[in-house]
Image (cartoon, rainbow, N blue to C red; front, side, top):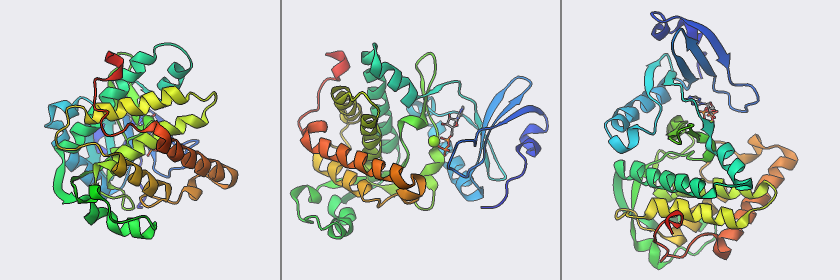
Length: 309
Ligand SMILES: Nc1ncnc2c1ncn2[C@@H]1O[C@H](COP(=O)(O)OP(=O)(O)O)[C@@H](O)[C@H]1O
Ligand SMILES: [Mg+2]
């Protein structure tokens, strides 16, 4: 990737000079440069992603901004310049931190409401960007063969939409404000060369489910709450969703594909070295086994959200 210019030199900041800049790359394995930048009366979040990805994000943003149910959940994109994305600064907390606090004590009902809205949001995002409708088999067969899994199954004939992926729709990429509004960030992952750009919605759904299940490695172990959280996310996604129907089989299959690192931007062992890698694999395996034993609802679960019961 080319070398970025100093963000203070971007023409966006010519008329409104930045007096304070904070590097937020510290303690981060990602090589993308990220800054908070302060001007007299504004704060911004800047991320260097290179010209190609920046252009794609800006094009996607045009469509997102026209969509009333989507646009209020994204920070505004103020500019795309020299491979830098300049975003509105969101004063919020990563959802994972918010969650963990509430997992320990109190207000779990509120947590479920938020996860329901987030599931619903992802389904609206997918429905806004449906590209095609194909039998699941057409997409999955090569992977099933590689994994030695049966490539004949009734559900493989069902037509499933191909949608624009988010690729990293996880709790660390959702910011939640004091007034409980949520904002989705890190959308540039949707265009990284090693991730798919269009695929079945189950790709994104299983990434979020694995992310929720990964809370299981944080002690003490709240299996019941984790189970409720995954169900609520799925209910939020599939409740009132006529375009994309719930299939436990497809969800489990995609989780297997993730476990086998088919759609990663880099191998897991380059992120987590040595012992951490072994722990991470164990955690994933445990999560997937737990799914098999009922972490995922059966196909007739479509219901009233549990926070309303
Ligand atoms: N618009 C924003 N406003 C405020 N903070 C942000 C914004 N976007 C991202 N951040 C902060 O920067 C962190 C890294 O940003 P992100 O785009 O997720 O990069 P990465 O690719 O490293 O995950 C986020 O976890 C969040 O804390
Ligand atoms: Mg992120």
